Image (tube, rainbow, N blue to C red; front, side, top):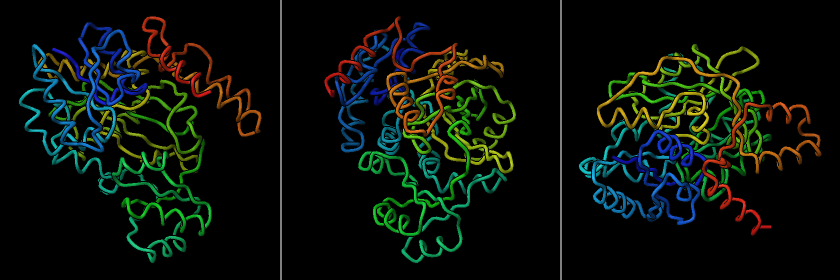
Length: 380
C-alpha cells in the first residue's frame, strides 16, 4: 500500500514523502510540474496531474486513475487547500479506490471556511482577534471606526487569491490602505481582523493526526522563528517546543470542529495578556511538517497506519529545541534584513543554532535540493 502525496511541489510535500519513505512505506508523488521537488525524491514514484484549482474534475480523474494502478489501496495526503476543495465533492467516488484519511466534505467544507473556524472558536471561549466579515463599502467604513489598525484582509477560503496576489493577506495601516485593499479583496469573501502584536516567534502551532473518532493519535507543537515575508508569510525558520497546554486547548477546538485527519492549528501568543489567539486551522499538512517527524512525531505514518487498520497512539511529548529552516531562503533574506536594520545579527544567529535541519537539503536524499539550486541559478 502506498502513500499518494498531492501537489508535491515544496517542502511540505517533501516532508511527507521522506517521513513515509524512511519507514518503508512506498510513495507516489503527484504534481502538475514534472520537476516538482517531491517528485525528485529517491523515495517517490513520480506522477503528474492537471492543476486542481484550474481543472478540479480532471484532477479527481487523475487521482482515481493513479489509485487504480496500485496493487493495493493507496492513502491520500493533501498539502494544499486546492486539492481538498477539488476532491471534496467527488470524495465518495475516490473512497472506492483510495483511502481519504480526513473529515468528509460536509465537515471539511466548513472547516476550510475561516469565518466558521472563528465562530466555533468563539463558541467554546477560544480567543480570536477582533474580526468582522465585511460585505460592503459601508462595512469597511464601520470597521475603520470600530477596529484598531493595523488590520488584515484574508480570504475565508479562496486559494485563487493566494495564487493571483502571491500573498496570504493584505495588511492595512491606514484607512486609505484598507479601502484600497478592499477593492482587490472584496471578490474573495474576506475577513477583516485586527493584528495581534508580537513578532514571528509568537506564532505557535499544534500539528496532529486525529482518527475518525477524534482521538489524537500523534501531536506536535512548535513555533515559527521567522517568516518570508516577515509578519504575514510562510515559515523559513521554526523550532520544536512541546507545550501540553497549547496542545490540549487546540484539540478542544478540533473537537468542536468535528475534525479528523492531519491538521495544523496556528495561534499567536499576545504579549499583552499571554493568551493564544487563533490565526487559522489548516485541515491538512503544513510547510514544516518534516520537523515533527525529526523530533519523533511522524504524523504521515500515523495517518497511514490508521488508514490500513493498524493504528498506534503516540505518547504526548517530543524532543525540544530542534530547528528547521529553508536555508537557501533564510540566509539570503536574513542577511538583507540585518543590513536594512530590520533584524539583528544575533537574532539571525539564534535561528541557526544546532541541532538544525533543512526542509529541502538532505544528504540522504540530495536530488530535490540539487534541483532547487539549479532553478535558483537559472533565475540569476
